Length: 155
Image (tube, rainbow, N blue to C red; front, side, top):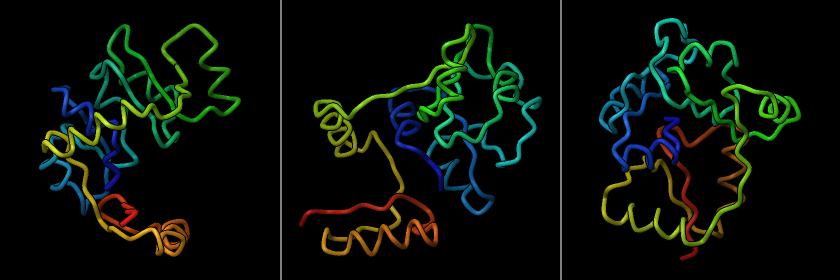
């Protein structure tokens, strides 16, 4: 299921979060607190004016469709610094591109939240570092694991 870490963090902070997933993962998404849950080929008019923020982590949402989903003053954020996205971000309007690096203190807080159970991220597969290349190759080639994240441990 495509539940991103950002959605998990937003849920942990009490935000209402919607998202998209495959039909087979709808119940898992509901169990994690997502509402509304929409299909990948959604009609944005059904969500007109519903969101303060649309985080397009896959860079697949058409800008016009995404704008329709925003409340007045809402923002669209992409994490893909493509030339087109940077140009849209430079223009007046709701579009922003977020380019950042991991901050150790932030990652430690995410780990603490996960340890407290306030951050719920589905984990499909855990592999030791010695199997990381094989697992990452499968992920790129086959799109596996399905149903959660791939975790690589150092132990």
